[in-house]
Length: 445
Image 1 (cartoon, rainbow, N blue to C red):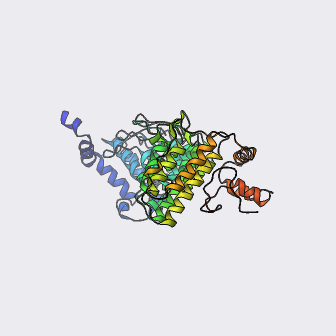
Image 2 (image 1 turned 180 degrees about the vertical axis):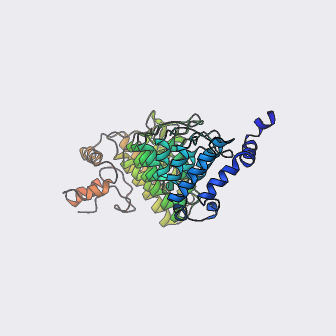
Image 3 (image 1 turned 90 degrees about the vertical axis):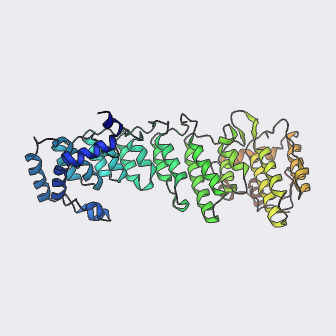
């Protein structure tokens, strides 16, 4: 009827209750599962429904009821219940007696395979797949595939591994264009407990399984969209949470960049590198990683005319020091800025600046002279041929990629003075040394 079409959930629930629930109840009673939902641990479920006597009794009931009305629905719904608890042997019997692998839960519209993933039952996933379940099937409501669901929770990693082994389509997209990789990244942003973010293994498996790191949804979201959300969250987190998120972002960026993702594309607000530069005091470890891993400090598509790392760092510096009266804090911020400028210069043989590169140092209420000195050093380098030792430093650092470069430099069989020149560390130079030219003094005579 028209009313039933408008209320599919209620209609389905009514059919279970009035038509095939008695058969379901009888089978579950034989397997001692009627109260299983009230038990707290998966270990308690493991002893249910798999004994020889229980399975034999179950077979007798199925044989007796094989020609009864709604038998197919009853046995198929029972499969959903035993799937939930990972009772593989009971599921095999139900499949033998005609349980439908495409049967949908009347409330959630999930199939047995979806439920097996949601309950993290990898052996059940394999059983259902071997009996013909479509491992790429999407549920009717959310249009999520089993792989999408497996990627969303770190606890479902065993199911994710099993689905990939079974040949699940790693680049299939849902109705919004999100692949399993984007589902995994979105979950990281949506996690309610920042300190429990540990979905990197799922991301690694997806990428190694062929996931496209350059995928874009219909709405324009990329792999960086959700990591940028994490950056924004860091501004309001505790120090401990910020450290956890920084480590997580570094690990994720390592994986994404190793599989072809570019963090320095445009537009600027969707560029991970640019967003880190905008607030470099919070994201300094991330920026160091990005630059030492080869990320461009300008828009990688259009160059500095689109967005410039140098311009962004100076804008951020002026914004910070204009409100920082505390000399020790402002000195640390300026030193961070200097280190980033050096990292950018040491990442390419030719320094790329915007054609209209200027900094309004008059807006700096404090430390105006320090910012002017830094800016003058950068402008001087723009019009000066690069020294041979600078070119050598760039070449050596590029050869030592990827990050961490400092560890590799310290292991080189070189004099300390040369190592110092190759290293770029905001703690290595004196805080008052604001020159960025090759005439900068070294700590050794």
